[in-house]
Image (tube, rainbow, N blue to C red):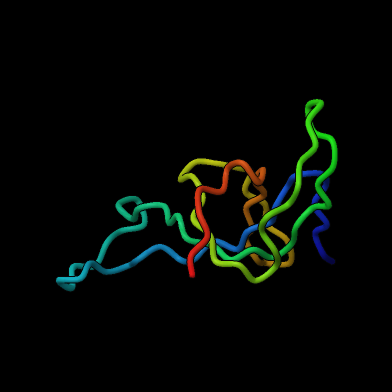
Length: 94
């Protein structure tokens, strides 16, 4: 099964949270900070959203930084994804 986003939506595969600090302290799952780095897995076609033409700037495979609490988290075939609007993506990482 695959996810095909609509309009200006983007499907992200979020990187795993750090389980250990740089100094070697192991963090519990409650203390782990939600990661902001992700990889683009699928991109919607863009189009007219809220009366404005939206052009998609990200593409599959891009590394991006998204807002910490942006989007909707979904689980599909044992994998966790986040679906966000393109406007929720803050930057691309090169």
